[in-house]
Length: 334
Image 1 (cartoon, helix red, strand yellow):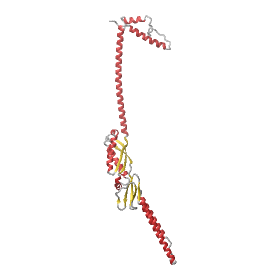
Image 2: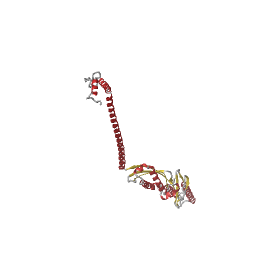
Image 3: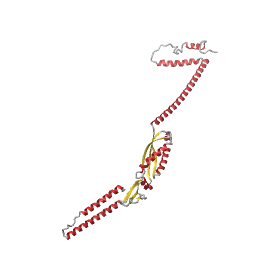
Image 4: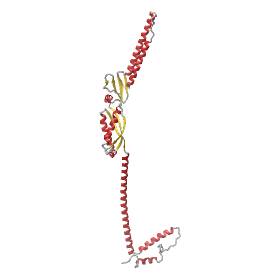
């Protein structure tokens, strides 16, 4: 693409060629005044030939310069508009490929119409007055049919002129409609809201938005600590709830166990009243357990067999029956 600076450089180069040819023509040797007529004629002929050669070279240089600057190429993904020194901006938008213009009078301006990204991060407030840092990424491109308007009003760096302010304003306006927790739970809705407003605003400047996305969302340190404390309190409440449920279940277990022991004691008492042999059976079972413990112990012990319930062959049974059936026994027959 031929820019304005390149056009100025080419004009300066052509002027230098022209000046050099003029100096060469002025320095060509001429015939002396004292010389013969033939010598003067030859000198004048040589000067005319040199002048004609310089003119031819100037014409050839001018034609080469015109041919070089009368065409320009538009690369893929680009478009061109032309500025005319006399008429101003032409209304035609030139597509990809080889195009023609009038040298020096016209200058092509190339636009890149491919999608490009731009990022913005801004600090704003939510509906419940919480400070939020939000990052937005926008994919944009210029409207190919409105490049003349864009160059006339915004220039080549149109995105740097309009997008930062539009993105900042639309992001703050949309975030202010939601609470802090809604910004997290309704992220898609917030992103779509920003995209709608930003696209509507950008269309007024003939800029097309391909995509708008939220890339970053963070809250103030104070709010983050408050959220963490809230979560901890909720977890503690849930833990206390389970502790209470566990205590209730333990209480029920103790009551059930006590009832079972009471019923067991009552049944044992009834069995002893009806049949004293039940206690003998229990005494034999206890003697077996004690004998196993004493046999397995490596210590030497000397204890009374009656106190260890091991005297099963003596008069212990008679004493036991008397204690059960006697007046001073455990159970009295009524």
